[in-house]
Image (tube, rainbow, N blue to C red; front, side, top):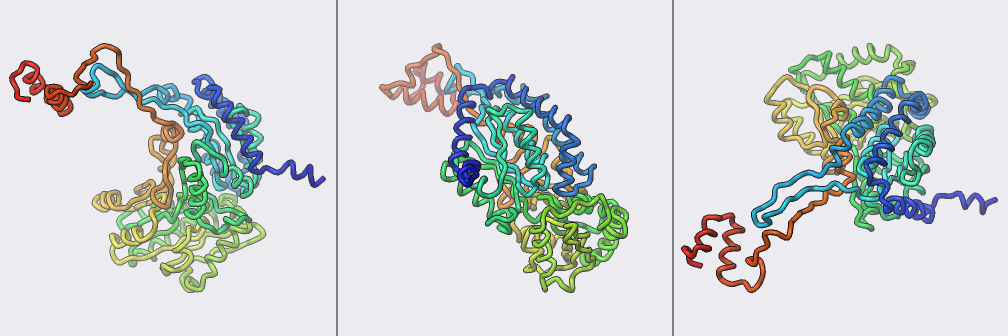
Length: 501
């Protein structure tokens, strides 16, 4: 019995076998063809369409995510990414023409996008379908074989992903491996052609509470053994700088949309903390309280429009942040807590000390610190004092402040006068900078990340010149120097004997 059980364990040996099988499939050339790529993308679009109800139900089981929120993020946005790839794939695959230099005349050149090979995608639990399938769409569009490792923290979603991709896609080139840290570790020991890792707060593993940057380093260290390139989407503390020169009600609603109505703050791009003017803070807090009541009612714990905390371990982590003595007298809106439901109502903290836990860690939950400054520009220094965030937000009608914010604040992405919508804009990349990540994806950016851009130069046997070959006579040297420098007139003078060598 024990021996049979042991045979079912996914270990390094089985991970190696999976990679070998996918490598064989990739090496056969099948994934490179437009026909195969488009067939898989169309199958995925059909999968999302036919299994929409199952997807929404799985997300409800894992996160109690409101149906509309689940439909928009997990179904509609993923489907849009799929349709975009289907529509544009022939253009993405087309080589890009490049100008050539006179030194290679006559010639032509182009950049060819070729698939990298066999890639690993380690996904996350907060948007379990969107953040799993969107990278898979890019990897398939680029012609790769793919292994998807969904997050075990969202078990219903993980199981459904495994079931759907097995039934709808080509299993000789696309696989799903379920499990926790042991399975992920076994996968990371293998040689891949690229690894994409999306931020995960690990549950019940040695990585729990490790924080996004540390887990990113673990993934990167594993990749370094094989010189494997990585895409890391790591999150961080995303700030919202709020000026007093704005439409208060709209700003408050959009801040709520980017925090409590965005998977209850469990999103890498959600607003982690607000910076505003000292005199304006009470006004902003009152507006947030009023709009929160409008959105979620007087008793938000009964609202069906707010996601729950994903697991008991994450619930405990958030309680630890709230039980920090350094913020005990700073809570201006204390949300109810119910461990049985895994729910925490919106909580606002005013002027939490910089060394408090809520200001040192990425919150990833429904707690909102508000930091006050005397001048709005002082907020720049607070943001710069922390690692570069995945997203940065500014609310203002001041055009000079907008320009200064864009020029002086470094972040993965940025949005002025709203929150989170930058990630649904097809032409914009999604990715971090510094400790918030490296590399980016979405649409064409996904295709490019999973492709090698191969430079190709074409020459004929015509126009061959002895000038490039030994022996290097003084005349040849002068001609070559003139050619390299682009001095055609000087070349002519040398050739007709009117210039000193």
